[in-house]
Length: 169
Image 1 (cartoon, rainbow, N blue to C red):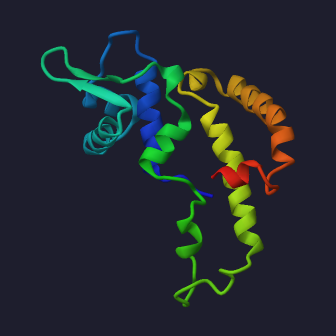
Image 2 (image 1 turned 180 degrees about the vertical axis):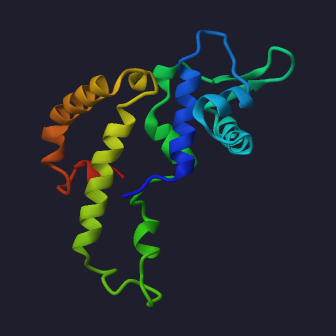
Image 3 (image 1 turned 120 degrees about the vertical axis):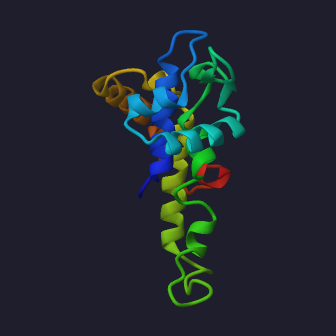
């Protein structure tokens, strides 16, 4: 499993904006310096995030970027799906056919069930985690993920069963 640099950097830029006080905006060069990213890369990310409705921009002397909604209303799922999509979406199997045009296991594949179930569990954690939740130290976030995992344990036991998370993707 691998997140793209675009997804990671986009999350970092949004977290930097989430740390701002109400009404404070940041420019692309300010975000670039703070996150150690190139100005062109941050400009591209901010454009995508603006078009996706996660940030808003203002021009002029006091212009810059702000979150379009409160940090507790923007989930990690919102960000990752805007910038890259699911790790194991419907096209995952289609991209991994080897030399064949269609995967030889297209009709009956235990791997597809594994990837679908893993994606469902991951989706649930990402939907339950907001930018505001990430404004803490690593230890606090680890504890939050542990709490989420315990809360999801009954849900996870039904993955792959009729009516389970797997069937809602």
